Length: 109
Length: 188
Image (cartoon, rainbow over all chains, first blue to last red; front, side, top):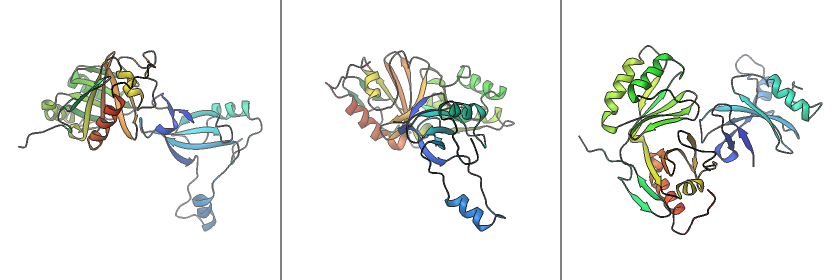
């Protein structure tokens, strides 16, 4: 069972209170982009064994979206953080580096 | 005018805890910047309560204010006064980016009371309801089995539960099953 800390209401919410929102930090390509960019934005998702960044919504709670960094193999949660950001904050990346040295996810490491 | 009636019109059940539908309760959803002076004053004027902090509920009987999310409050007022309070709020909030809506008839309110009240609710919501973790003045939005619900403590063994009116019958049945005689677990 996954338990994530909601950064908005401060609750340690378990999985059944939350709704998964897929991969985090997607860069949108819409009008003006070429077909390959749009294709990659639309279909190409990370499917890592290890460190992963996701969007979650505290659906049965405060209703807010937030980000979570976790490990897909051990379900270890490295941290959760605000949705109002376009990249993982430094303290989250440091927390991951402390436990998974040399990790890499898309352009972040 | 037709006569307003609450979802289950005071239905009740006695098991290891008493379950009752509370009847009509005035409820106003207020969204906006909760640190805004105007919003704080609106809450004070409508309920006499100060702005609740994160997951706090300042409720006294039919009047109070509950923290629902970082930009949302549930304001409780007597049912008969909703329209007047709402008009006063809308007037005071006219220059602020905020929204106040009457949701009284879109919600149902239940009371769970008795020594096993914590257990009854604990069977339905994924929340630690031990007295150490959940006490007076706190509110928690969560789920009750499969539907959303919010609850707070009125006294140490009496909860008030708010859910959508459309799910009122479902929630009442849930609570009845959770409160069946002989179903004490003895955790809390």
